[in-house]
Image (cartoon, rainbow, N blue to C red):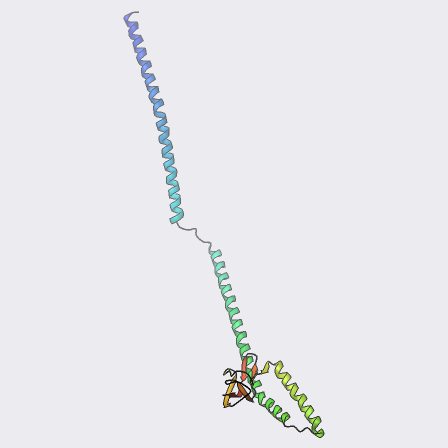
Length: 209
């Protein structure tokens, strides 16, 4: 082999060595580049998610439809007015019932003296045959009158033999009694009446001492 051929061979070997080294370096750098690219992509995704989360938490809310908001406002106003009217109706009905009950009680209270006089008159009627028809007629009227009062909710208050109750009885005197204990009603001087759950007139009584 001549010297010149030897030089040419050495040059070709050097070129082949340089090419091999460049290829090896390129192969070695590729994974790093891909890894770097993957890291950059992951960081970009994380930033996008964080930015999206911030927008979700701190971003402006979607603007409400004005028509829908107006409808909701009108519905709320309507429901409030319905509730207020219902409360007004209930309150008015209650007041009417109270006024009616008070008026009825006032009228019935004025009728009690008539009932008292009926009872007094019947207690003093003679028992002879000539007046029997008259007494029977008065008794029928009295019973009809009492029945009508009962239908209106008027009932007599029990007194004699009952423990004195200031809510029902009006004590006007104290008496000695062997029939009832001390503090109990011994005599009823005037009958008392209830109108449903309300005292129409207190019983006038004498209490045993």
